[in-house]
Image (cartoon, rainbow, N blue to C red):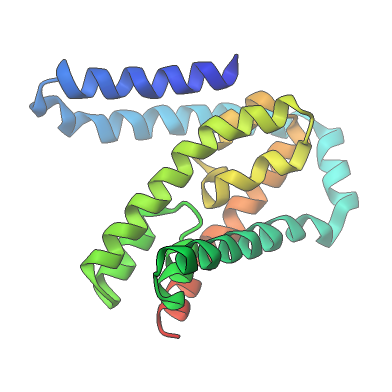
Length: 199
């Protein structure tokens, strides 16, 4: 049901945006969605912070919690390299695009400035697609009781845009891991994107 709800909400937004919303209104969309996201994140933070036993479990996991973003990064880069090879995209470009980890605004701008506008545009579109696909896949993985695996599709977005969904369909422990995952991957983007494009 959650997957259908997410897909329906995205489709509804596309239809409203395409045929019913005046162009002048689009100036207000970004601040309104940012405010709504902040309100949701505060609510999630309160919910997570109130679950003291969850923090105890996370403390017990120790350094292992950082394995999640490391493995997500490795999988993202390997997948990008494989996809790039199939599509005939140079390895440095495909891995740099994959190193965006879903953070489309930063990776797209970075690549447009330091490499080429075309690659920057491709990075933007690829990472936007990753976020949209994550909204569909996360509830499916959670419904199959795959736990922390549900965090992986979101990449760097698991600390912000996909966090409310993860918190809704999983548990507080997984939500905390999602925050850690998003923070680590986000910090890696400005380092790895220039690194890979320079290979």
